[in-house]
Length: 314
Length: 205
Image (cartoon, rainbow over all chains, first blue to last red; front, side):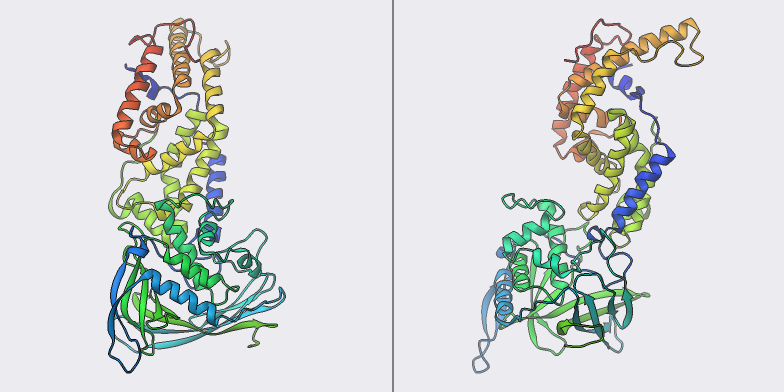
C-alpha cells in the first residue's frame, strides 16, 4: 500500500454529514437563492426579467464598425467609422443635456409609463402593452406594478431584503456618478469597493448584469444614467449593430452584449437602440418566450415622474 | 469511502443543471443534493465536523452566486465545487495545521473508548494503524499549503490531475510537480515504504 492509498483509506476522524447539518446547509442555499441580488430576477415578485449580458472578450473601444451616418437631410449619407464608445459616450452627453433631475420624497411614488410592442416570431399580429407602475420611493409602502398588462400590488420591502436594480431611491443615490467608480462599486457590491484593483475577466459578466439592470430603470438620480452609459463603453464584449430601428422605423444603432459559448448570453442579450445621429437612447429590443411562442419586444419609457399617490399621474 | 456520483452527461449533467439555474435558481438544489456529501466529507477530513459544515454550506452558496461564471462546456462540476471548497478551507489554514498537529501527537483513543477492541491482534493492528495516522497527520501538517491542497484534492476529493488543475486554476504540470513533492514528503514521514514502521516523533514542525 503506497502513501496515497494510505491517505485515501484514512478518514481523518471525519464524521459523516448529519441530517441536521445537511438541512442547515440546504437552508443557507435557499436563502442565497431568495436573495434577489444574486438572482436573475427578483424572486417572489415577478418583474420583467433583467437584462442578461456577458462578455465576448473584445475591448469595446477596439470594436469599430462602419455605419452610415446621415449628416443632414440635404447631403447624402456618408460613411464613417463609429465605435461602441462613440455611441455610448454620445448617449451619455445627450442624457446629460436632456435629463430633468428629480428629488422625490421618501413618502412619494415613482411613476413610470412603459410601452412594449410585441410581435410573434414567425408572423402574427403585434400587440402593444402600456404598463404604468408606481414604486414606493423608500420601499416602505405597497407598490403597484404592471408587467405586460398584468397588474399587481407588491408588498413593502421586508427587513434585510434587497434587489437589483435597487428599489429604493436612497440606494440609487449612493451609487457613484463617475463611470469608473460606478463600475467598481457594482463589481464589488456587498463589500468595500477596491477602486485601485483592476477588474478580472471573469468579473465582467456580473458587471454587465448590474450595469444593464441599472439602465433598465426608467428613473434614475441625476448623472447616474450617463455614468452607466459611459461605464458600459469601457466593458469588454460589447458589439455595435448598425442599421437598427425603433418601432416607428426611426433609424438607429444597436448595442448588444454577446457572451462566450457556455454563458447565458452566448446568443446575445437585448439590444439597446440609440438614434444614429444624436445617439440619444431610444429603447430596447428584446425577445421573450412564453407558452412555446417567442416574441420580439420593443420597449421604451413614455413618461415618468414623482407623484404622491398610486394611480396619480405627473 | 465517498459515494461517487459519477459524471453525468447531456441533459442530466451538472452543467445542464447549472444552466437551468440561470433562469430557475431553485434548480441549483439538484447540485447540492448530488455533491453535498462529498464536499462535506472532504472538508471534514481537512478541518473537522464543525468547520466542515460551514465550508460545505458556503461552497454551495458561493457556487450559486458564481453560477453565471461556470463554463458549461464542462459537464462535471466537481472540480469547480472542490476548488471553491479548497479556497474556503484556505481561510482556516491555522485551524487545519493545529488539528493535524494535534492528531500527530495525541493517542487516538483511550482504552475503553470503543467497544469490541479487546482482541489482542485487533489492538496490535490498531496501534500500527494509529501510528501511521499520526505520521500522516504530521506529514500533512509539514507540507506547504499549496502542496497539501493538491495532494488532498487527489486523495480525498478523488480528482484526477486535470480536474485538480481546474479546481486550483493552475497548469496540470504544476499539479504533477506539487503532487510528486507532497507524496515524497509523506513517504519519508512514513519511513520509506513501510507504513507499519513506528516512529518516535513526527516531523510535523
